[in-house]
Image: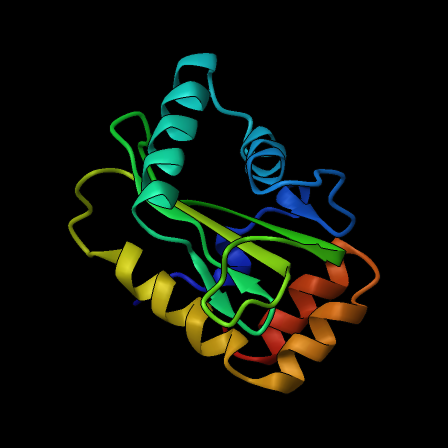
Length: 152
């Protein structure tokens, strides 16, 4: 059985008022919340930068889902950040990104949880009601409760 998003995003990796003003700064802020080793942190930043260079992970409607596989990751890890004012992410619809779901995974994962998690996030944020609720959650616990209510 697939692991639910609310089990993959630790409360300490939920940032409801991102400080960063650029895509790079926000990625750094979220990666820092995952408490990786210095080596893993640098490797993750490199692969995320390469991934963004291939094409924006801004999926539209104010959502970005930066994602990458990295040799230094031993398990799938996630973080979530919200930037109420929005920031430029080169999303296809041209809208600023307010919600960032970071997904990192090892290079090979037997259950292919990586693809399932990406699909779960995309399905979750496809719903405009969920996007509205993400705009108003007040703390990490309320964020987790939203995920549980939505069954993810």
